[in-house]
Length: 257
Image (tube, rainbow, N blue to C red):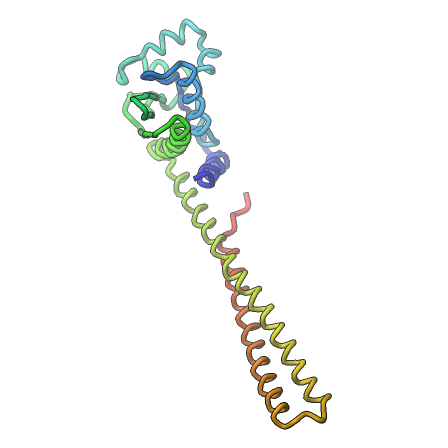
């Protein structure tokens, strides 16, 4: 999953043709969770979602832009469909509002993420996670945030991001597969070279040892022929495997930026 997360960051960071989607994250609500932990999860999710196609304005950013008193008024939104949400989004020119909740129920941790349209309050995307511990919750929240970002971009007509991510994953899979014929091809070439070398030794011995018994000469000739045929076959197989590997590496390469 770490590789997928890194790929998402590369895709989000590399696509900047259109204006980025702006999401406001005014802070998370919690059940039996301290304020410091809520701020941590809010920042964790915001960082995981942010990229070239999507930017996230956190509670600290709101404090700097709106001021403490005005922020308190806007953050008083309790109803997802109220005018307050639209006002909060309009204040920063945002496309959506990120609402998050973290709850601890016994030994289990639950997280909920939802992005609402800043224009009409409708839900653009939502994700929920459950974890046995807080460490697992942090990892699950980060992964859910990445998927949430892709869902939001799709809901707002930026679906090419997920398609590009899938294409990158296919290329990565092809590159991994390419190493198999590459290794087999190298081994075949080595085996072929060794076989031809031993066969050459047999032929050399036949030509430089005039007192060989007939049975020994026949054995050397037969062995030399077999080794020579094996060597040629291994070399041919090695070249073919290396060609396949080269083709796969070409198909799996990333396009130049």
